View (cartoon, rainbow, N blue to C red):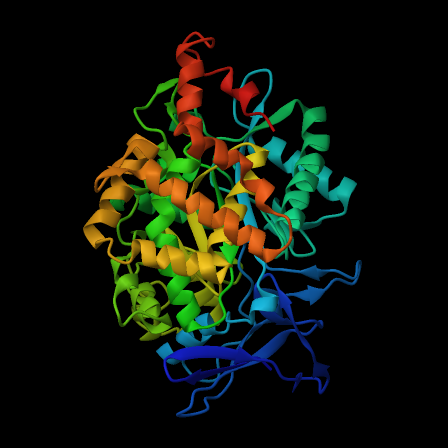
Length: 526
């Protein structure tokens, strides 16, 4: 059994063998950054133990983490919709259980992996209009049948695919997302991206469908974007206008690429979280790729990043408390407990719980399900509805970059792996950013979407800091010994010239494109 223990201020995890409910021995393995049993059982038992006491085990269903498929000997990981709540905890969850859940992500350096997620816009090549759900369903079914993916259903609707440790899912406006497997090297990451794009294109091209790598829908308004038949998105669509002016744009018209990285301990998590937050504006600038809205320049280099500034202030932003001396797993739990919820998933339905908090849920005070208490599934689901620039789950997600063409899909994980998976580079970043104030970090976050690398910072430009940061990323990759530094070539050109991808698109728009955005669909076609 995975046992979480606390020693001093740092949490850690160790592995053991436990017995399943049928008396079988259960061996634990790592699945998509989660320690998971590799067996087919209805449920498994996790204990959260501390130095002070040992609590009664909490239950949550096996489908949360993984099982062996009968049809193929492959591990399947959870994809939306959330898994059914087969068992309720034998005791109410405590805050310590929620802390232990995050701490269970700690793993030794040799087990660190790289998980890459990227979204893209599907469109009809003849009309440039977005794919309708019916076309998406045809595409998903085609990929499933031709390339042997498992189908993910919500009711009678296909909403995603699973294969091994990878999953394909739909964002609210039909954006097509690959959530990649946790992989050891960037060569494997780039091979995964290439394989995915090959499979998608093999089916999509026969349908007259193309895919666009950009951060914001360049041509069409909100009213022109189809709505995907997923219950959680209906709840979000009703709630977003109540808490910000751009939340619907975020849902329906943005695409991102992000990388998910591991940590070895609470102290390691803190260092990576701080470095990631401080440098997120630099990543936003390097990958800025969304300068058009409804056919015209929008005044920003990363409209996608700008949209997050007025989506929902309760669940977004730069999280200044991460830089407090008291920060750790517990402080992130305190933050997440007070972020308003979107939903609870029960009996294969999403129940609207907007405006209430997980803290209310822990006290049995949700009007939508009065008296009911949460389990770890609910906590896991809630963490996916929080959207800061860096997000903590059982790993760290770097969330600041626009979607882009395939070479940049390999460059983003290369950038962050070089900085955060190498001790020398990580410490250099922490030293470099140690005296940056909360106000300066916030200023960069707010100005970079508009001015990119030309954002003034102290006695120079952000561009000059990006030069130093890129060198640290390259050095970090070289010390890893996998010959991965070539994946940084895409961003090396941006840093060398100071010209972001968005500025190149604007130059084309005002030049040979004749002030039309239509050619971008060919320029950034996968």
